[in-house]
Structures are given as structure tokens and as C-alpha cells.
Image (cartoon, rainbow, N blue to C red; front, side):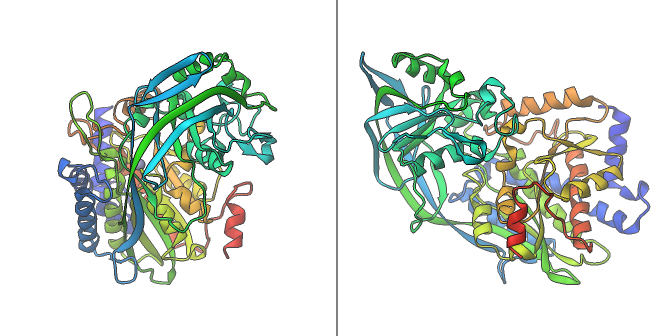
Length: 548
Ligand SMILES: [Zn+2]
């Protein structure tokens, strides 16, 4: 980093008056306060917040802290006269046996849990087991009529376990002619694989892990093994679940293929249109003990009522939760502090509130700051909000979601996840261009990031949603350096106990700059005649039209 440039940027952000002529902007910019942002990130990611897992003491502390902060910056309660929205959940702790027995024609052998596979369940039955259930390799486990693809064609998987590949057909062999090429569709997501297997009546579903196709190492899955998982409490729901769901690393899948008399070329053949599922002649047996606890968690919400159109809202979201206490890492640390993910975004909501309150004149539309729960457990808090919106979807102009703020030095670019979706892209672009900055797009479209944070639940009910990530073009150091920084985080700290605040390197200068841009986008929407719209071709456009 160029030292002089770095100082200038810090200067601009802290004492913006020196760099900007608009008096309103001047006041606003000084209201976004780097010191309090950092202070609040430290509070939220401290060990005594225990990794902010719902249903724990860490949740109690986090929810109390956020309510306190929302009140202190002058936000009105966001849900009637309350700052809270109840989110009914069930906590499912499935404890798997140490081994799984595999029977083939040649004999039996055992796989070891954690190392060779990880499994869990979304069911609340006390005992879940596989008892010599047949294993079928079902390619990508996808049924997509619009892509002429059906891995379950003519297949009866009732009482059977399907073994499927993560990501979209074509991905493992770089065939970009299939599906959306390198860009992951919802069919590529692991959640989809389990949902489809359950719809087909399968007893179980195991996904073959490959770091490139999944976009994260198997260790991320291992870290969640035999730990509790949350779901929305849907005791009355008719949506089916498979009994046993989980992952196996690719080398174990290949071992299973070999025992069954096949080999790893099955993973290639599965990319051919018309591929037919392969019964492997293997039988699986294992058990899980399940404990279910029904409880509720909370979304925390505050608002600033708009001066002109009080019933029209812009919603900023950030998930306050993280992974709690898990398996110890190599240093013995068990607390998943989640400093970046997502103490930064949560603390950012407080700064946004402060900035909107500090505007010379109130925003014309209502600004809602919504800290959602249980994102890490499958976007549950935002799903609950989307299914039970406090502000009607058709009166909600936009969602702006923050899931991680740039903890390091400023970048020239900001990355938009979900290219070409809505007018929010042009809005951010114009805000950034005024500052000599640019938008860029996600280079990892194969990772399906558009389906991996809370904005997705807003998009699903038709609300244009903006989700950005830290840019890679680090000022003075360039893109290669920026990419390396991000890779270092993903490889070493993402969803690990070491996602901690680091006073030596976390200047938050970049985050402050990005936050300023997101603030201005919201401010423009709040005071504009135009409502942001989905672009033609977006899968969410029709939902928006229907919700009016
Ligand atoms: Zn996150």
C-alpha cells in the first residue's frame, strides 16, 4: 500500500469536509465513524460473545447489544413497538456413529465418519439409520426441464441413498455449453441436491465434495460435523426431507466406485446429456441419535421513518449470527469469533443508522436496519422475514445486504454478486464513478454466491436486492495482490476459529469506503422518484410484477 495514498484515504473518510463540497455529504460522511465501527466489531467478535450462535448466551448478548446500539443511535423500533421479530426455530443435534458399513459382493468394509464422510439430518425423529440401504450414483442429482436434464429419469430411489455431484452439469469437465456455463444456477447448490433427492423419495443423499466445484475445502463441512444445526420450525410443513444427508470427499467416492467395479470416469460420464444413473450394488448401514429442541431466535430491527413516504421502505440487512463453539483448531481455539463474517456487517448497520440519522433532512422513505439471525444455518432469519414480512414486499423498494466488509485497505472496485440483475447495479456504479471507483463482477460465478447470503430471500419475494463484496483491485497494489489477500482469508480463516479481529492489519479503511457507497445508494433510493427494477431476463422480475 502506498503510504501517502493510504493516509489521504483515511483522511477523506474521517474528515470528509476537506475532500467534499456538498454540506449534506460532509455531515453524513463524518457520521460513518471508523472508530465506533471497529469498536463494535471487537465487541461482537470477542470471545465472551461465544461465536454468536442462536440459542446460546452468545445470542443473548448479541441481541441485547444490538438493541442497545439501535436505541442509542436514535432508531425507532422496527417491528411495531419492538426492536425484535421472533423467529421460531428447531435446533437439531444429530450425533452420528463413528463408522458406516459398506457391503459389496466382495465383502464388507468400514468408512470412518469425519475423515471419510460427514452426515446429518433435518428430521426430528430420535433415531435415524441406514440399514443396508442401496447406493445409487445419480450424476448431478438434477431435474431441470428447461435444460432438458433429468438425472432421476426412470429411476426409483425410494429407500435408497443417492450419491450426487456438487455444482451444475458440465462443471466438473469444464463443458460451458451446459446450463449457464461456469455460472452456478440454483441446481448446483447443495441445498437443491438434498431438496430434489427428498422430492424423489430418497432415503438419503450424499454429495461428492470437490474443492473447486464446492468452492470451499471439505474441512468446512467437517467443522459442522456432529454439531447442532438450526431449521425453521415447520412442524406442520408438508415439504419432504431425506433421512440422511451429507458429503463424501471425492477420493472416497472413487473408492466406492472401484469397490463397485467402476472407476472415477463415472464423474466424467455424468456430464453427458442423457447420462443414466448407476446402481452401485453397495449397501450402507449406519446410525444417528437425534435431539431436537424447539426455541426461538430473533431478528433485530430498527427504523427511521421516512418524511414523505413513510410506508415505503429500503431494508439494509446483515446477519448477526455465526457458528458458535465448534471443534478445536490446531491451536486449540474452539470459538468461531466470526469477526469478518459477520461482525463487520452487523457493526456496519449501526454506522448506517448513525449516518441516516445525521442527515440534514430526514430520508423521504423509511430506512430499516435489519440484523437477521441464523444465516449460517441456511439463511433462516431472512427466510422467516421473507415469509412473514413486517413491511409488505410490494412496498419495499430494495434490499442492500452486507455479509463481510473489507477489513483491509481501500480498493478501486466493488464486486457485485449477481451480474445484470437489477437497476441497483447502475445506481452503485454511478455512486462509485463519482468517487473515481468502478464496479466489477464476481469472478467465481461457479460458486453460486448469489444463493449464499440473505439478499437471496428478498429476491425470492421479488424485492430488488443488492449484494456486494470486497473489491480485488487494491489501491497501490493491484488485482493480483487483492486476489491473494482474499484467497488467504478463504483458505485460512473462512468459517474457522481464526476469523478474529487483527489489530495489526484490520484498518477497515476499505470497509469504510465501501460502506459510504452503500449508504449513498440507499440514500438515493430513499429520495428518488424512481423505484429500482429488475432487469429483463432476471428470474425475479415476474415475481415482482405479481406482488403489486
Ligand atoms: Zn456471512
